[in-house]
Length: 260
Image (cartoon, rainbow, N blue to C red; front, top):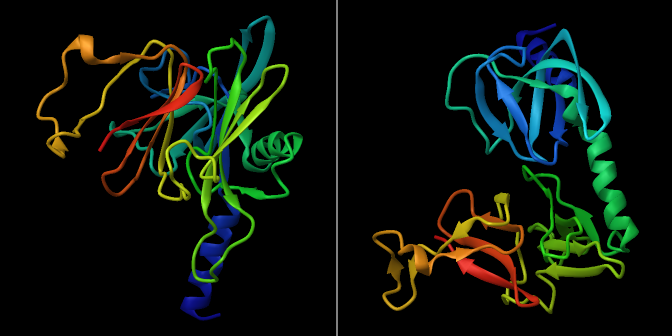
């Protein structure tokens, strides 16, 4: 076997052995520098974040969460793009709040199926994350925001148009597909979305763009000009360039606040 063949074999083997998981803790999952609850807290990963498990320590942990027992072990992880850890050293999380790639994708696909969206759209799994949960319309019921793509493509050389499905989970579920003909912001393709993050109720948000001057604001606005979210919202932005904003519920409809 030649050198190139050997390198190819090990690259394939490495890809096959990679284990990707998603955070399922609604309020996020803490990363620590040691496989123990006494380890230094590094940061918290939001729900839906993809991680790569690179080592299972065998150190078991059992915790109570809302009356339920969650069992698992400490695992060492690497973060998938675009997330990164600033501090050097090992990073550990409790895997009782991780779900493997196949099961997580199946769970989200079932949500789309339950609302008759899979006939028209595919789940967009190439983004990290691609699925958010929150009370986006303030009715005290958990809703879904999911990145999807059209199944049909008008061009063989381009990706199908990207959309964002917002599913309100009240007694009569309401589905809003951003990027459809009824898009409230006039956008037909959300493939530009890279950062896709939940923003919690009560957070103060503001635009860094001055529409009158058509330029960046040089400083943050005063407190009375910031908008305090009355519901959960989400932030979308291009990974590689300017362009994005907050999508939030206000007076019965979704609003847009530009952030460059």
